[in-house]
Image 1 (tube, rainbow, N blue to C red):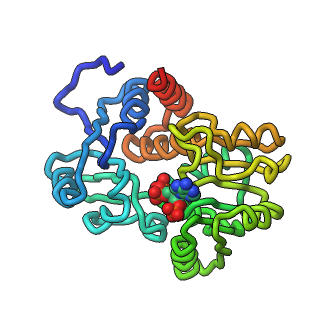
Image 2: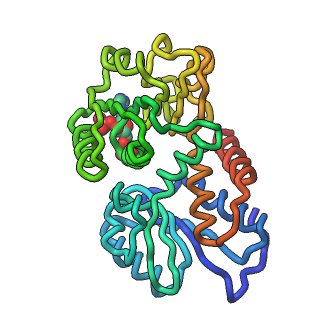
Image 3: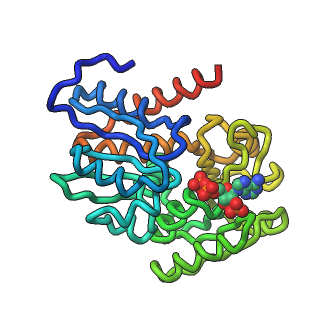
Length: 290
Ligand code: ATR
């Protein structure tokens, strides 16, 4: 619960996207600002596609300290920024903007947040065989950071051409080759037989379709690392079945919280209260369900 006085020195952060009904970021960041006792406030701003440029001008005019950027603006926003972090430039997508005295710099903490979620669990993806399902926005950030880190990637997608486009971009920018397959049972079986890590970056299994899973349970192996980028539900069918098979599971909640924590650190210069941020998101997800 936000319960503090708004001073004249307050620094404003927020999120731009459309739609924003389901965003967890305001609750996560405002709780973190409260916990750290800093004079910051985080606000959701619903911005339609055609108004993106004006929204970023508004960020400059209103001296907004930082913004998260979500669907549908992560790629289009780049043209309105002054600087791009090297990784965000390679990925071609931005989810965090920092305003330093009028200079707007774009970052991609979806990618660094994903990596952090792995590293914090003691998993180093360098040299590992990683199977990634999906070729949308989430997959793009994840595939790039893993390719840059030195993982061997196989990307499977329902629309195989989208996966090909992503693999071509990785090849052009990072000079690393990525195998691409259509997402079907046979290809999954083939890819997973050699996989150390499986990442679900599709929306299959997301609420309300919680009975769906992108991978048949008999393809999941003991010791495999299964990272589902979905955080609603907190535990997906894929994760439940992966646990039953003896796999090590990581939740999309970790990626969500770490992308937020890394953005928080860029805006405030402080270490983020990661555990509190996680608890706040869990509380909100449980509340929304009831
Ligand atoms: P995000 O930004 O979360 O990655 P997105 O860009 O819309 O969202 O991507 C959604 C991903 O889930 C895509 O890879 C999509 O596959 P297509 O490229 O073929 O559309 C995948 N996806 C969504 N529903 C799916 C389904 N029922 N079966 C398989 N893949 C699905």
